[in-house]
View 1: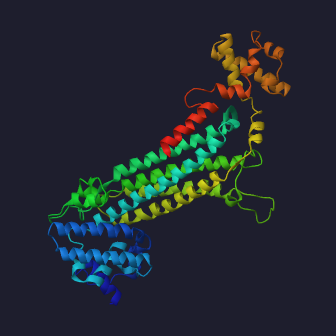
View 2: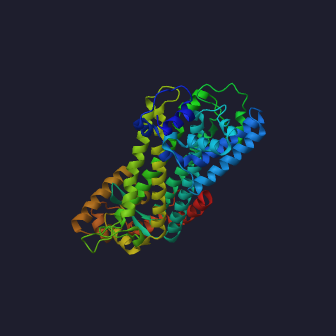
View 3: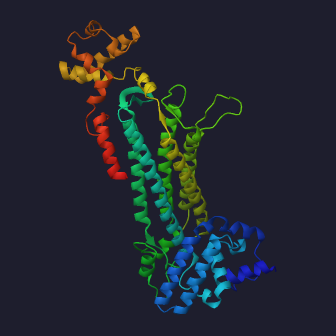
Length: 466
């Protein structure tokens, strides 16, 4: 038997196994290539666990001090790339414990008293996700800041509002950007909800049944900044709903990012020309010299599919598992780590795009002249000034639109006698009612697009989110 395999059995399995472990299984079973990301959390959790063991007189205080010193040395080794990760030790937990024993001897063998890798890994994982959610929330906040800044610079800039990607009504560019501020605000609130729900400490649940040692789970939970210990040891080690919820939150962030990316792609195209995306976030073509492609936005749009896939991956993984722990749960980390990396890259690039965005106000205004964007204002005029029921006003407006299409002109280019040929009661007040500037100013209901309200909404957004 090879030295490597003897080391494997004596470190992890103890005396239960006499045969060799297949090299194929060693590689297949190992998670060290990806779960080494958890080293900070594993060391922090182990120090808290060892301190509790000492406080409860399960180990000596000198053992705890040696364990703590050894773990901090290991952390420094990892951070300075001096630590040698070994595939035969499977995961970050056994790699650290094995090195600890090498450094401090017998005291290191006492660290795993009253715990299992089952409760250890889920505690590390929760701590990692909790910290990662904070980082993502900060990036969302930075994105909101840039959106609010652009909205403030363009609170009066007129543009078409669309439904079905057809010109619908006049809005301001600032109002449109604030819609995404609200969407990302809800994403941040979901992050906080996710953190609150997952913030219970599993450590002390051991393999699945708890432990007979007189441990203090409340002490460990407090040390690791959890609100409380988990309440059921079986649930503690077998549930990954917190990771699914995390992926769900990231998936929704990705969907929202994809939607704004899609609009940036459209607006920067030749058909719109509403905006110019900075060269930093565009690329060229290998064959067409004139091209400037919005690759950053397109990749953000594309990455959202990956985030959806990771959510489905982990959800499907969990649905068929009996309680308590199964090795399948080792597959929980890669989709989480992948989604984390990709959502952060998406956010960083979107922040850069929005911060450096150039707005073509003239093109937006010109686009607003098409598609009869004040048709609803015309119907409202018929209701307000002529006391015509809205459904009838809607029908009359439709006929006026047909007339304008026949004459190939906008609504405000129709003559008064043209309008009266369809509805004789129409008077000169209609001209003011159907102008674009009038339409914008009149949208003064709470949450509306009136520039005055947009300025108030910007001020409120700063207070709520920044």
